[in-house]
Image (cartoon, rainbow, N blue to C red; front, side):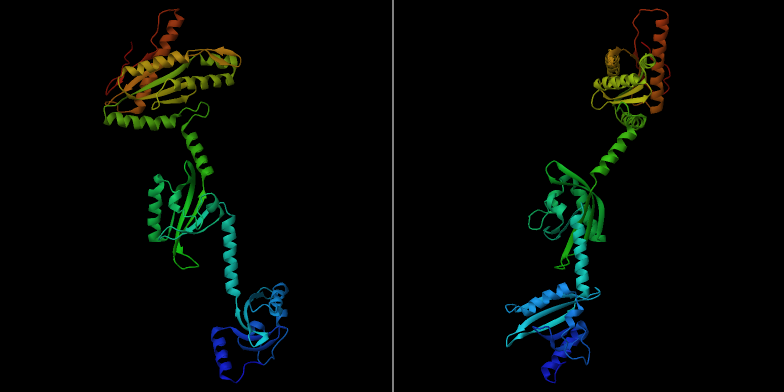
Length: 430
């Protein structure tokens, strides 16, 4: 029956009521023999007599596990969670067989609805974290010891609890500044977002978008730091392609006007502030229109690609070749030891471009006219330098045309040079 008049019963009832649990004696046949506290957990209400049908209120599959525990003679303790038919409530029953009455168990029954739902939510989150391709790991900020990692962080980064590795082991030296800055930010705000290259093995880098989060370990309540890393290799590659396309000619792969302008401005700034010399070669193909007219535009494109490769082959690593437009090219020559080097580079370009070019089973030939200027400390305007080189190139081309029309067989100088200074206006034609 419900309770008794003894002090022990009164104390049990008070403890059970204060704790919000049910203290019950349950027989191996499932009958509730006595109970104290919150009887509603087992649908026991005053003055209902001890019930034998309460297990019918719960999910049969889980109830079957309880019946097995109650009727197993070798089972002295059990712990079972039961779910109501409608799923709205969970109860947990913890039982211990009475030593002097082996046909009954002393049980504590408590409402487990919130804890089961919390555990279920945590399990769902954990399943998601294990299923994601992101790198998720948690560590103790005191010693860097990994306390939890999902599968990608374990398998790919090698950051598994007990592995002896720390997050520091996958952060290369050139990324340490950003990493420590991130840790400094979370000390103040609790969260940091940025990008880091992670390096699980020498030479194998994974660019990632990273979130660092300061919190507490749910099991130990000790401070913890969590990292969520999303690989951005494809994104970075796409950005690199876009950045490359923004500054390069799609046909030839040479720099375009945008990159030339930027690099020319940077070069001119160095020239003005130091004693460094630089040069501009403005190039225009001769006879290119005839190739297009006779062989078609595909052949013309092939000639432009071949000319680009030949121009590039004559340059040093720090020089820059640009397709300026159509069949025009500009070469930026930097770190000149002497002004005359501009002429020598122009001669090499003229010679190599003039060699026959094989296209579609035949060969074609084009020439190149080059106007050159040297940039020194008195040069003030990059656009003016380009315009001056263009004027030289046009003068060379016109002279060639006039001599060809006149049938002259004399040799023509095809590159011109000027030290471009303030107030200088006339080309120095050789």
